[in-house]
Image (cartoon, rainbow, N blue to C red; front, side):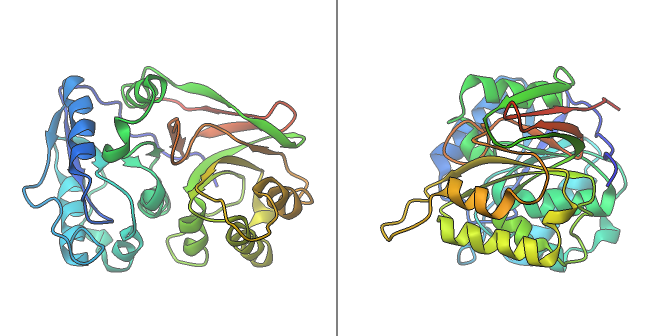
Length: 302
């Protein structure tokens, strides 16, 4: 995989479209607080009047959510699409979305967790970078550093950053950065819209997945041959993973499933759920240093 095309930088004179492609929006106070942060920066936000029309656990039918995405992507005044929340549902859009209806003008997609499916699909189908970063409902709970870095990346003020975690497997490597929610990425393996993973540094996070489930997903990656393609693995936060039954620790799972691959692995990096979620530009060039426990990304503005 080669580095992807970076969308143009944006500024507060441009419009940001807000859509809900996944779970039904119920955290309205958190949503309003996130919207305020964007508006305080001077951005005009385009929020559909029917942003969330709950259909069970989804923010609307597949058709409604697909149309929201198409309208936001094709809007000539929209410089970026900020997703309201994650949850579940964006993978359903990939099955139904008519990709021929999307124009070829690159723009930023901003989100994480369930939004992984759309970030990876745009990388595969359009060869365009996305930004793995807080969604609207989590933005106000972020520390100032991650809020500032999110806007600095979008506005072209930050083209390189180093995340510091802990060492797991020694070595250094360079490759294309592909951040993801591990569950979503696992479920995309083998589908037509899964990007190529050769020459990739995979950065993973998840929530409410105990060690045995993480073990199961990584074992699937091993058996399918995809882990063996990677240049390195950067592990973020795996929160709410505690279980009451006897268990391997998460670190023991990492070491058992990843230490024999011959690639550098770092862990406890500051991205993911329930804590600081520093932005990671999906598709940029990155360096992983397993001796220092760091992940460094860099990109060129278009």
